Length: 190
Ligand code: HEM
Image 1 (tube, rainbow, N blue to C red):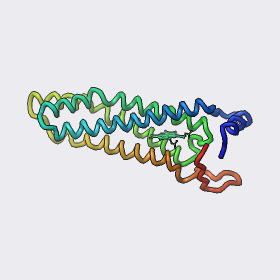
Image 2 (cartoon, rainbow, N blue to C red; image 1 turned 180 degrees about the vertical axis):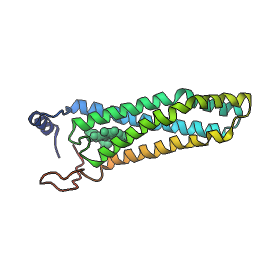
Image 3 (cartoon, protein in one colour; image 1 turned 180 degrees about the horizontal axis):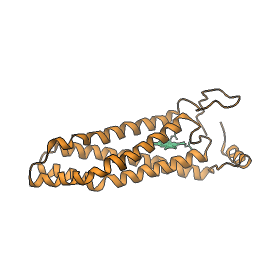
Image 4 (cartoon, helix red, strand yellow; image 1 turned 135 degrees about the vertical axis):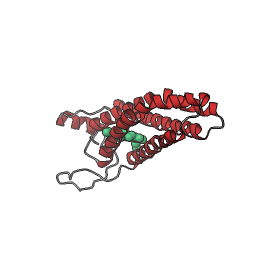
């Protein structure tokens, strides 16, 4: 198991950026908290979508859609970006690297895809969702429109759960064979 002292010596000798012990811990804490916040916001989205669909009254349903449109997207994007940035710093600043191990590279791709989906697929529809929520108190809204709102929290929660499993299990080893090393080395500690 590589120690922090070994990390520091390696950093000095190979010239690469390495996080010191305290910075690594701090960055990891922010990384885990932001990932947790992101998952929590996804749960809120799921609750609001379900309340909007199956709520007991038109007022409750309208409020749920308006809350969804007003409060959700930017906190979600913020936590996703913090998770991405701290993940990249952790990758670059430890021996895990960004595209050295499969579990990190796959998380990077998933994080980028989810951030893109928030901006491209979720955010642009929020004005419509807001209008739809308002329509509940005024006239009869179009029921078919809202059905696709189930997908964002379902896709995101599944992906984030998978990313958490990857982070903990660290499967599949390295992308490329290390000179003289085993092809699928499964090192758990950086
Ligand atoms: C997609 C959302 C993500 C989730 C839910 C997530 C979750 C986590 C969790 C729970 C840990 C702690 C694992 C442990 O200590 O056993 C972790 C560590 C880590 N994550 Fe992420 N992560 C995500 C995205 C990323 C991204 C985009 C990167 C980099 C490109 C990344 C790189 C890392 C690295 C290198 C560690 C290990 C840090 C260390 O041991 O010092 N993560 N992640």
